[in-house]
Length: 402
Image (cartoon, rainbow, N blue to C red; front, side):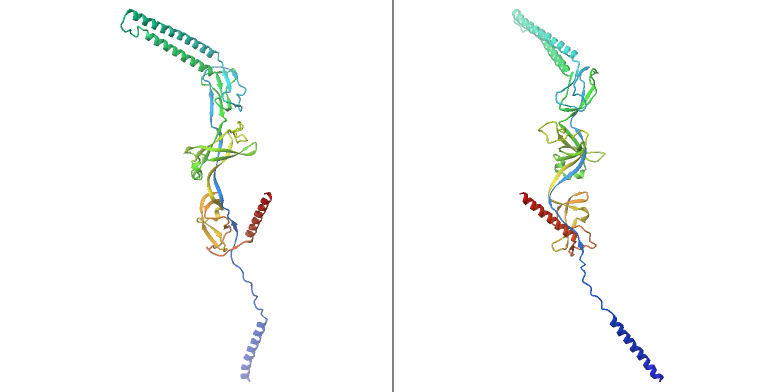
């Protein structure tokens, strides 16, 4: 009996385990089937625009007159007349009388010189007559050749010298008389006046200062590595000057007249000198300037440089080892070698390697591999659609206007 129990009990336990296993197995739910997940990397792209581009070099400077003249007295005397225009800030034309020094002494000196001239001419004529008389008397007395002293030639030469001296005295007296009038040597603006009516001036006394209004100059510092972007190193280049007048931003046009030809010891810059014609817009019909470009103004300058036939701007952070990533027609990653013409802040100017309409990848990739399959983000597609719609709207509007 005990032997039977030993055989039956394990069989019962095993059967019970099998039944329990089958029961629990029937209660287990089958695993749900999951949909296939697309693991293609998604990127954002931007269309490349290629168009002609003109490079510019930025600079700055202070507007100054090309010609400045310090007026000084060339004769001494009392100031007897002053022009009403001889005040700071007034514009005067060439030849305008600014001040007059008392001319009485110089008029008297001229009269005296003229009198000496008349006396010298009379003495010269007398000496010439005496020479002719001496020559005729010598021929009547003897047939030998007369000496120069006999013909009074030394005396004649002396009188001729006196006439020339008198002529020089007249010229000197006339010049001194002219110098009593202080006139503007060119069209100018009065910068300062240091004399008053009735004051006495001596030779070399400072009278005032004039600033020429025909031409203004601006010295523009340019770094040496920026000269490569200018045609002929900037000589003859057009310059756009940007400044303010009465609180309004204004632009003036200038031309680079010359380069100073040296590198400044302090700034290590090369200076280009730009000229502006008629900065105060005083000549009607001969200037394109509508607003005065005042001396002493601070201006920013954009120097027009070389022209690139086909160029595009690309963010600098997208360039790696002279290459950029683009999305080709098969939606695959493709690296393109580019030629960088210049760096402008956060962008670079690409002159070769990209074509108009190329899809530039502007988002980062964790593990980029040339030729890998990519997908375009919906944001990029929406932007492209918006650009197409805007382009179509512009085209329709243009057709409607025509």
